[in-house]
Length: 164
Image (cartoon, rainbow, N blue to C red):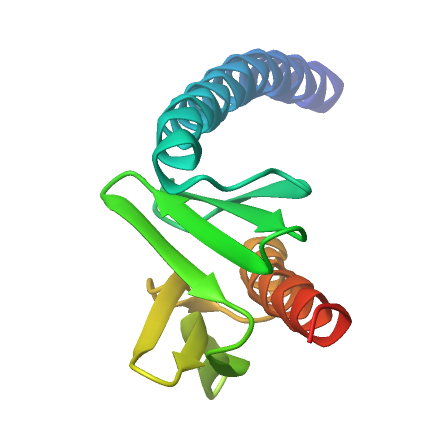
């Protein structure tokens, strides 16, 4: 009697696991497709922007935020500029007018509250937010957001230092 109850429970748990795996794969494919559409959209708008600003592409990098927004970071070594493109527009930064680039990560207790990169030039300061939702800082996604912010900051600082 007890063996049949345990066997029934195990069979039910197996079916639940198989169902969750199937749903997980579908969700992963859906998320990857959304990211690909976002990246392609930014790439398409970057072509028009680069033509209008006479910038060249030395390298480009795609970043995603915690709310599925994207940034396309494009470096131009010839003109010593870089551009950050998102869905709402773009910002061009010149090496000569650049002052500072730093990560701003706010962790309160075990929770990540904000993860952003702050770019400061002679004229103004611009903040690019990668994470604004409250989440555990040690979680896989929390670490991903922090790493993304730090990578974005590192790439810009490296470009600035190499092209001054």
